[in-house]
Structure formats: C-alpha cells, structure tokens
Image (tube, rainbow, N blue to C red; front, side, top):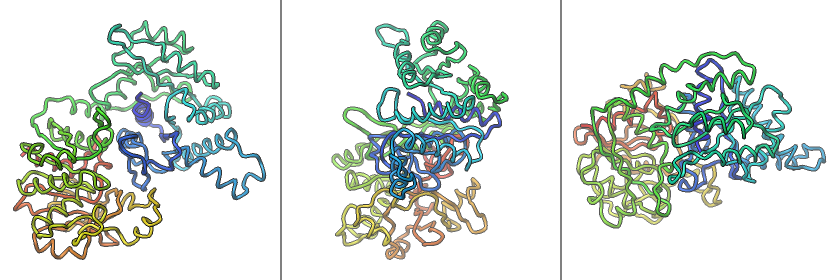
Length: 535
C-alpha cells in the first residue's frame, strides 16, 4: 500500500519545515515486538539503537528523517494488551470492568501522548498497520476517533488507498478507495486528506471523482504513484502542497520545506553511473512459494544502494539461496561475481552453503562482507580450511562439534533452556574498540565514524546470541586471522578480517552496519566494500 513510505515522507516534509516530529507505527499483531516473526512472513525486523526489534517501517522513518528511532516509535497490540492486563492484576483500575473500549483505546492514546511528551515533539505522525476493514485494527481506529473528539482541531486523518489499473481496462479504478473511505466512515472517521496510490499519476478526472464520493476537497486528493526510488515520494507529495494542506488543517503556520539535500540525493541516484559491480548475496530467506522477496533483507539491500549511489556504481545483485549452494556447489552460482555478502541467519538450513561461499571468497580473493551469521560462518570456514579443524562449527548448528569456534554466551545458556527467545539476545548498540593498523581501523577513521577518536571506539547494533569462542583466539591469530575489534566491556570479538597484504577486502562483523546506513550517510563498511568490488 505504501503507508510506511507516506508516513516517512510526510514526517520528513514537516521536519524540513522546522517542526519537531515523531513518527509512530501501530501494529495489529499480538507479538510484543517483531523479533520472533519469520522475516519471510513480515519482512526484515528493523533493529533500533536501544535494542527494539521493530517493523521495517521504523527503518524507513530513520532513513528519511536521519535520526534514531526507539521503543516509543513502535507500538504493537501485544504491548497494549500486556500493559492493560498487568495493570488489572495490580488493581490499578480499582475494580472496574476492564474492556477494549476505554481501557485498550485509552492505553493507545496514552502511548501517543507519552511519545509526544518524551520526545518534545510538536507533531506525531501515526501509522496504523493493516488496512481498513480488518477486524484486528478496529481498536486503533476507535482510539483515533476518540483522540479526534478529545482534541478537536489537533487531529487529522490522512487516508492512503490503492487505485488499481486493470490491464484490460487501462484506467485506474476509484471504487476500492471509495469503499475503504466508506469503511472508515462507518467507524466515525472522515478522512481529511486522501493519498491515492497508483501505478501512474492520477488525473484531474479521477481526483474529482474521489473528492465527490469520498467527501474531501479536490486539493486534498494527493496522487502518489509508482517511482523508481522511494526517495522521490516526499518531492512528489510536496509538489501537490501536502505540507501546506496538513499544517493549515491543524492550525500551524506553513513554512516551505527545505529540501535541497533531498533534491541532491535524487540527482545522485539518477545520475549515470561510472562503475559496475556484480554482488552475490548468499542468504536463506529469499523466497516464499514461487515468489522472491526483497523485504526479508530490506535493510541490507538499502545499505548496498546507499553506498553504491555514493560510489557512482550500478550494482547487479544476485539473490542466491544457500540451500542451492549446498546442493549444487558454490562455483555454479558465485563464479564471476565481484563481491560476496553472507547476511544474518538462524538455524542449520543452508549453513554449509554459506560456509562454502565464505571459503570461496577467501581463497579466490573476492571481496567478502560477513554480517552477524556471515561473520560467524567465515570463522567456521577459516577453522576448517586453515586450522584443519574439519568438524569446526557453531554450536547453534552442531552442539557436539569437537571445535566449537562459535558458541553460546554463558549468560544465554539458562535463557535458552527456558525457551525465552523474545528480546533475550545481545541487542542494540554496543561499543567496540577497533585495533589500530587494521583494515577496519582505516575504514572507520576515513569516514570519521568513531564515537571516540582517541580510544578508537565505535558502535554498531547487534542482534544475536552466539559469539566467537575466545578460547580459540590465539590459534586463529597465529594462523593469520586478525581480530580487529572487541567489545569495550566484555572483550567479545566484534570484527574479524584478513590482512590486506593477502586479500583486498575480507571483513566479518558481529554487528549490523546495515541498520545504521542512511541515504544521506552511507555506512563506511558498505562504501569500502563497494569500492573493493569495483576494483
């Protein structure tokens, strides 16, 4: 539908007008967070600085606004019910009947108000998950109705609806939008602005029909059509004066959004590219049935794009299923690529294919970037190939391995026995000290990415349980593997690499730099990886 990008775009426009804005995503599901959801089912969970495992729309908010989101930006119905039930158990409702309307809706409104107050924001842009007519989100709509009654003049509704263009007709049909507006009308909500999503721009004829049947003015029907990059959307919306329409409806002074940086970004994205690179991504969450998914690795693909645009590089991405590599061998899929990435993953499926890919990149001097699981399996590959530990493995896959070079953290063993999976990993930002005179040091220094230049400390986001087994550290280092960063407090291994004297780019990081990359500020590791792929 595009609600997440619409929310991010509107937030950017209001922020660029000088207002302080907090975007909030309200999800329907009863999960406490997105951490335990299969990425094939719901997309790549976005990892925040404070460890919140959120919906991928939160990542769009960060990329558009250029600042960190956190727990208050992400609400699930599971969080709401949990809080209300716990309050009931503590007798905080003083013997009242606890019901959906009043108590659940009240908790939703309370979360929004607290987010506004805590962030010191003037405007909250709230995205309601799902679509009109789904029974799961009716309480969010009810809270929205109550909020508008409680604060007249301070609340407006922006309705995003899709106008399909059947190929045999060749014109966009407005009936689905009319029906979805009728549905929210039945819940006591009248949209103030209608954002019409479509394949092509909506003409005046369609805008007039939508205005008539949806009870909005023609100027409040905004066309949001398919584009080659989502970063164009704020500019498209602003050409139709959406910021002026929104601010006037909530009684704020209109200030023209300052979008020079954003315009420069679009110019960079669209400019002819000087270089080309073919990059293989060997993962395990690419397909569902007969279809391939981008959203399972959304943050990674975005980070590649950000770096490629800055490096004036056209990237051809090969989505390679690690299980196919296991079955048919690595050469069939990877020979001839300019770079290899092994991303995040869980469990045993496809693991050997990932290990083969890490080995092939090391042996054939192909730039390699291992992210979390990709770092761990690069360690396993090195242990097998160089140290001769033939059954070396991660204990996540083989608990009985003779050489557990990747193992479970001591603090996690009891947690795993209790099957307490949600929110129990090493999550969020962790500070690491980068070793001088290493490839990693030079990369972080080149882009001024240190949070403390004197100590060489940096910070990356984490989402994992298993760690490099430091009892093997000296053996790895004697064999030529460099441990180039360790966590500041626990001395856990954060980054491994090969010397540049023997390999152009071979880096594995336990952290997730892809979650910190932004279109205006690409992450250094991706910038240098793309640079190595070009060479």
